[in-house]
Image 1 (cartoon, protein in one colour):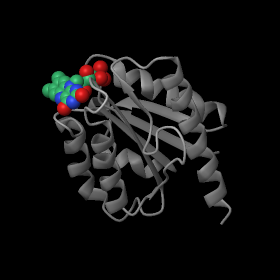
Image 2 (cartoon, protein in one colour):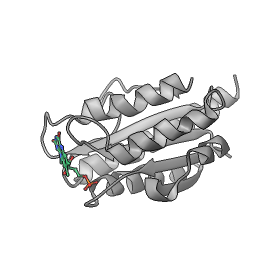
Image 3 (spheres, protein in one colour):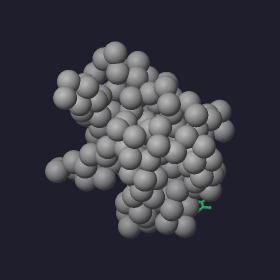
Length: 159
Ligand SMILES: Cc1cc2nc3c(=O)[nH]c(=O)nc-3n(C[C@H](O)[C@H](O)[C@H](O)COP(=O)(O)O)c2cc1C
């Protein structure tokens, strides 16, 4: 069974709602899923999962400092996440408020760890987003994203 870890920071709950929706989608696709606020997660825990999906509110165009610290501390396991799948999601206050730069911020870290990242040819190309609280279409897209990464993990495990 594919194991998925979703780690996120959320101060006012918007990003947490996307995290839960991604978890539902991943779980419905047959994965074992753990969802953790970054305050309760250790970077070494990523070693136990096939897929790691990280999310953050946009803070000044980037992921929040606590999530960046989480990735800075992941240097202790550098090289050991190679080949796993990474994904990212973000929320912001404005349409052009930085969701994409926040997602890319997270995906950069995953790529430097040697992880596999996947875009989407339609809808949110980089990963699930919302402007403030996720609405129903945002939740639907986030569920699909969770399922997509589980399906990818299953395909790659057969390569
Ligand atoms: C310190 C700080 C910086 C922020 N910077 C941005 C920003 O650059 N662009 C933006 O659109 N929203 C910005 N916001 C708004 C948050 O990204 C937005 O409200 C987000 O949905 C909050 O997520 P949360 O409810 O999970 O905490 C900022 C909020 C804070 C507190």
